[in-house]
Image (cartoon, rainbow, N blue to C red; front, side, top):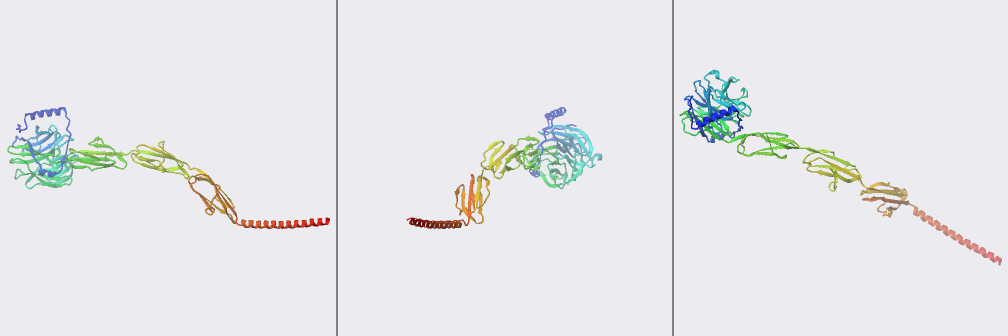
Length: 561
């Protein structure tokens, strides 16, 4: 069947078909898939649609029905005839410059009202519209995504006929519309019906057409059959399962008929329309770039991270924040599966001028711990502990009674003890440490005690330096204090009549206390008086005796004379 060429389908375009087919024969690497959703579907109101090319349809009965985008091509299905079973034509346009690539006419797809591309299988699934042969109702036609050659046909498991289809890459599911266009339904990867999404609505007097899914939106064009030029975009929500809004599609050009038959997203935020034009009969491609919305999927291990976002405006900066669980640090930051440079204390990652879907995974692992071991001689100290790197840790210690600090070693090295007499603080720990504290007995001396005529505290065998000790004493019954000597010197008995306190001891001491019998002075005086009386009596007697002897001698001499 001879085809007429449009203005941009020339011999060079035909030659490119040969090159492409040759490339398929020797194998090729599929381009990287860059997807995006529409950031705000209301952007359709202000869409600046541009006609980027068209192709004349040779058959007077042919009409465009659906389009889809593969990894390489924009594929349009042109129905051979509405009321006759003739082969339909699949036309491939280059995805990069929209130039004509090649076409295949070999199979009747029963109107081919909708089609979609599954990149996992590299296959195009074509849905029939109103079937001339009722046996074809519920068919799925499968076409190779590279060659556009027919591969096989299979029946819908439910037996229902679906007039439109769209593949959901993220979930490996399909959205379909009923053969009568009344409802959207969700199918699994085996084409079994999972659930109903939403009934379809349309402006009065318009007809259902194909649809596409971008993000949470189902966008379906409707054609006004009365005006022949007016088209509308009817929008639904997948998540809300309901109709959202209707927007007028203002397409440039003064053609007598412009019918939007199908649409697809050919690049992030870039929507392409397949529009049927009459007089002459042809398919025209329109495109408009809307604000794209990208997905940011986030994961985290041992921490928290910003929630995944499905609607992030393209071209903007987007920051992902993350935070570790307690005592964890960032050890790996994966962006789109690739490890990127990061710091252990990093808490954010920013995408600049967002232009694609991304994944971010923050991996936090437990911060290493180090042992702080302790030892002490003649005292107590905090137990060994495991401490996280970069933290501070204080070890407290104290001596046994009557012991004092003699030295501290940290990791085997002696340190000055001033300021760390009772505790030591390890700061910004980066390794294991050991602290050893040594106490020695405080120097002591003897405080000797002695008493006469009473009782006194026992000798103090160990009076430690700097300590204070009080020595108490008391007399026996009938005795009174006579003297108190400290280190051989008398002290004021009135001040220290029953005790003496040694303060801030720094040497040996001795205290001697003497009590006397309370009546000793009276006895002494009495004895002294008796002695004096006796001496006086003896003297008197001796004097009398001497006088008597003298008289006797005088008498004797007198007698001799």
